[in-house]
Length: 323
Figure (tube, rainbow, N blue to C red):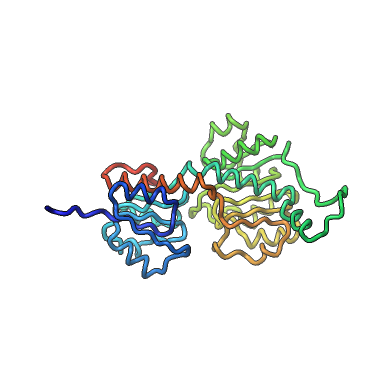
């Protein structure tokens, strides 16, 4: 009796076991790189050579050279909403489907963006350190004064799913919403009363600016030195999008000069390396890229990635293709 050759799925890092179990239950041969660190290039090439599908992370760069080594691969299922780590045009030429994990991490990332807004505006990290350092001597009228959200202008740069979810949360705090986006978001406007505006106007009038843009050639350093100079001295800037949409060096100078009140980061240029200037500042909150870091979001991301793999390897359309 002829033995059926099982299709191979390679997963470049440990993800929630529910997704791995799902793939195995469908009869796929699943190989997972179990070390919690980027894989050496030689090992990555070896595992991709005969894989029918791969579930990848943002820090693995799928360029033409790497994809040429993927002799059997039908799908790259990115375990992220972003996919700037993949050469999409070359994947098309190779007939490799590329998918991502939208929607399932919207709420977790929006929650974290608001956590950064509150941490920056109310100086939470400074205050916590103040107590731990034994400096708290009782209530004082001018101790660690922050900024309220109510009645302030809250600017959303990027009116997609996550940006809209942050706008809804900011509206609940009593903020007035403005947004910058290539396309009009009628649902966002209906839910929050948001007004679409130019980027310059948004930066010039907003008390809070939250970045929610994908990284493309058009959005690289879209928040440049010149754009940062438009912001109010009392404003707060939050980045949970991609580090490269913001000129960090320029921002560090402005934060040092108190030309911006505070900034909160979950992503960085050159990640995981962090600009040393940011580490020196008290008016900055720094997080280790945990926007989607909830049990619910990470599990659903894994299940969606696995679902995309199952669909494509079964000859069906991907659930969330990026092209």
